[in-house]
Amino acid sequence: MDRWLHAAPAGAIIMCHPAVRAEPADELGEARAWEYDYLASDAFPQALARAAVTLERVRAAHALEAAY
Image (cartoon, rainbow, N blue to C red):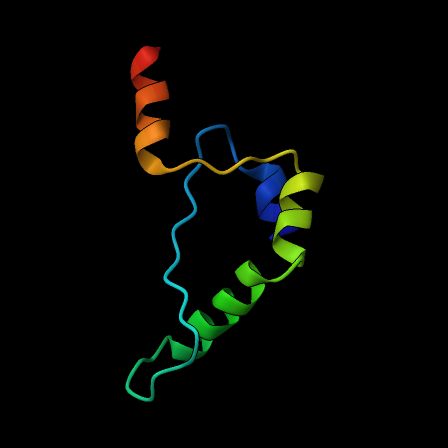
């Protein structure tokens, strides 16, 4: 994540679908659980700070883009 955050251009979008636990029928269930654990941990905001990245809701990002 550190590498991606440092390389992401302004306005980049992170899309993921985290889940508290893996569902047996979901092929991506384990990845979803890992995403949830990471995003809920202290490691994610620390990575954001190291990369000087801030998060915005999509609608706020679209409004900013429309202003230019």
